[in-house]
Each structure stands twice: as structure tokens, then as C-alpha cells.
Length: 304
Ligand SMILES: [Fe+2]
Image (cartoon, rainbow, N blue to C red; front, top):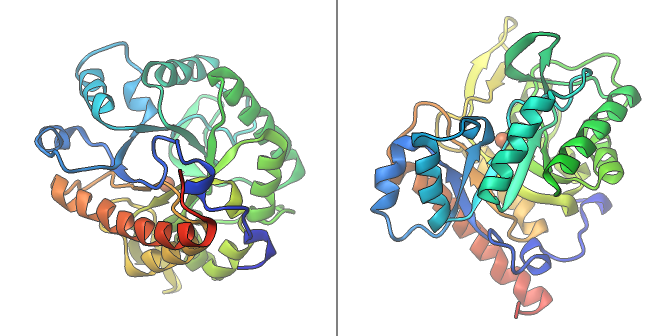
């Protein structure tokens, strides 16, 4: 890792009292509720999509309230369209702020992407042209979200399938500058890095060398589908429907060796397996965190 990746102290040492410090977690899926209720041994945290809890009541809130009583929760927004050129949807932002206030999550995050244009809502998170004009409105939107919820958010790097010819910033420089201007933190999705690197033919390791790892407050891991484009080249799709593949684990280990134990979440959003399968994925991440926590504490002194 180059100079950009140098950090002051590992994450768990910088935030020892944070509710998810050094922990690994998993997406919360309602179909796992009963299994989780019977599982007294899971020591991680759960992440939910804020949009699933924007109604006033009903079964989703009963389930999440019970989960929140036992575990730290991270709140992940997927529909804010922070990267879009049009103003944020004020009603959506108010609902988002309401969910954050209700559950007091340990972490709050959104995407560096857009998903709406005029009255059209897309089901995908779409990439941005990395220009100074885009940076201006992304920063304005991040400021607006942080002001609405009264706290810092983590912004997630996207998985991309196309690039914009008009981009004048690299993605890592764009992200670094967004964080500098707004004070937001970053959610590093290692699977997204691998997917984008494969699709566009760049080095995932070089990307991570240039990523501002000292600002990362959470890491995502997930599985992806392997397809081929019309020319037979590999095309990876960020599907969140299977275990984390070996190359993503390997990149993750490299990152954690440099950052120390950053809270890590295994995402799984379709073809949902039994709880014990997802739990095992989170525990695999937890073992990597624990191993590196021991190393980091030996290097920097024990947390008291
Ligand atoms: Fe993610």
C-alpha cells in the first residue's frame, strides 16, 4: 500500500467504545428472525436497508425492534440518489431521518450512485461521471443528508459496468475529495472494487492502494455472478446472492492488514440461504478481524 493508505492507528484503537468496533455482521433478513432468536452465540451486528422500515408500523418494525434490542444495527440507504443531479427527495430524506432517529444505528451509510431521474425510479444503482460539477452536487447532497440526520454518514464506492468518457477525476480522488469537503466517512465495498476492476480491466490492488483507507468506517463483502459480455470478456454482476468468493476474501485480508479491524458486513440480498450459512460467512470475516486486532494491539498497545 502506498502513502495514501497509511493510517494513524487501526480502527478499533481509534474507536474502542464504538458499538461495532472490531465486529463482523450480516444483512438482517426477516426469514432469519426465528433462527436468530434461538441463536444465543452470535456476537456480531446486523445491517438493514432503511427503505424497508419507512412505514409507521407493522411486522417489519416489530422484527427490527427485537433485533435492535439484542444487537447493534447499521442503517444502509439504497434509494437516496445522492449522485443524481436533481434535488434530493425531501419526503424520502425525512423518512430516512425518521428511521435513523427511531433505531439509533451504530452506522449510517448511503451510495455514491444515482437511481432517479425526473419521475423515473431505476432499480439499479447507476454510476456517476466523475467531474467537478458532479462533485459539487454530490457534496451538497451529502451535506444535506448529514444535516437532516444530525450525524456523519459513510458513503459507499459503487460496483460499475460502464464508465463515463467525460470523467476528469479518478474514482478514488473523487471519493477522497468528497470526504474532505463534507467530513463524511467511507464504506469500502471490497466486492464492488473487485467487480469494477474485473469489468474495466484495472488492478483492484492499485485501486485499494489509492483509496483513503483511513476514512473507512465500515467494509462490505458479498458474492457476485460471473458472466461474459458480447465479446466474451468476463463481466461480473454485483448480485449479493452467494458466498464471498476467494479473490474478495484475499483483497479483504490485505485491506484489514493495513486498517486493523474495521467493522465488516457480509451482504446477502437474494437467494437467501439458511441463517447458519450467512452466520458462517460473518464469522469468517470475524476471524480475520480478530487475527488482525491481535497484531494491531501488539503494534500499538492494548486498548484499555
Ligand atoms: Fe455494498
